[in-house]
Length: 110
Length: 120
Image (cartoon, rainbow over all chains, first blue to last red; front, side, top):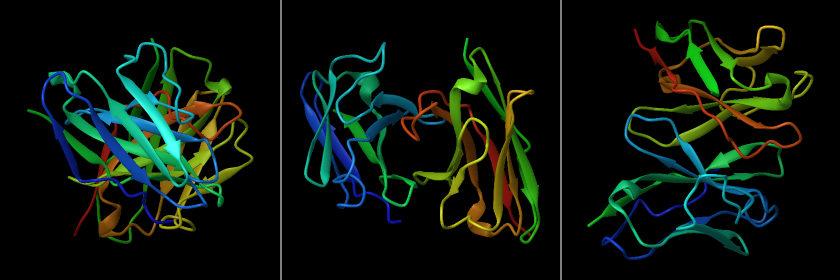
């Protein structure tokens, strides 16, 4: 199972919005509405930010939103804050009953 | 407070074996499926394995199938990962994580990880 494809890095200024893409196939992202997104700060465990493509866990800011079109999912962070600077990973369930992560995107707040 | 605490990591030679544990507390362990996820130094997250509540069904990534065995002891609120025939590329921080009882995703709770180093 190949990793989902994410851009290596995305940057934006404080207060701006950015979007991270996550490209998969018809066997994973395109097949199921089971895409989730995780934030990871250096040296820390990942944190769930979005699940079921568009849902946010309790306590996660509504500045984080998810969407999907075809085989590509996206995470949008609006009103960028300094603490949003981290690595972000998408993940999808697959037709082989495996789970696959994206390669990760480093978000830099300028 | 939800806690997942991994242990058992360390230095092991190529071809060797190691058993990781993940002790859960602060939530109803038998209401969650459990997973192992690893992260090689400076690299991304990779799902390793996941098991259902009673342990009857366990799925593995292709890279570890046949070498790693995941199990759980619901009486002790603990999940295990028995790793054998270890390779250099298995070097990583290993995290345990939870998913809902009826789904393989998402991973809501995570431990802090335990480092496994495979080297001669």
